[in-house]
Length: 160
Image (cartoon, rainbow, N blue to C red; front, side, top):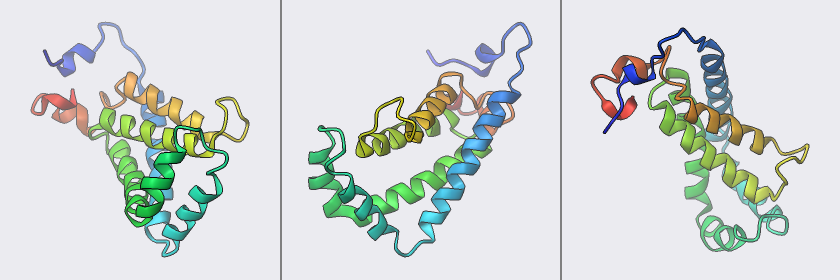
C-alpha cells in the first residue's frame, strides 16, 4: 500500500529546514557542474580521458564495464552524465521526485567513486560524501516539505 503525505507528517513538530537546505545546496551544486559539462564542447574527450586514466585504479568489477561499455560509447555516457547531473539538480531544487533524484544521484556518484577506486575514508574521496548525502536525502524523504512533492503528493501517489 502506498503511503500518503500525512504518514510523513509527524505528531510532534520537527524542523525540516536543515534537510531542505541540504537538498537545495546539493541541487545547486549538481546544476552548476552539470551545466558546465553540457556547455563544454570537450567534455566527451575529458570524460574519456578521466575513465582511461583511472582504469588501473578503478575497482576490479568496474574495469570490464568501463572498457567494453563506457569507452566505446563515450558520447552517450557523456550525455547521460552531464544531463543526469543537471536534471538531478533541478529535481532537488524544485523538490520534484526528490527521492528518485536522490537515488539516481547516489548511483551516479557511486559510479564515479568506483571508477576512481578510492577508499571510503580517503581524504580525496568527495564522491563517498555525496553518496552519503544522497542516501540521507532519499531516506528522510527530503521532498516532504518546501517542495513540489509535498504539493503534488495527494494527486500523484508515487511522490509521497
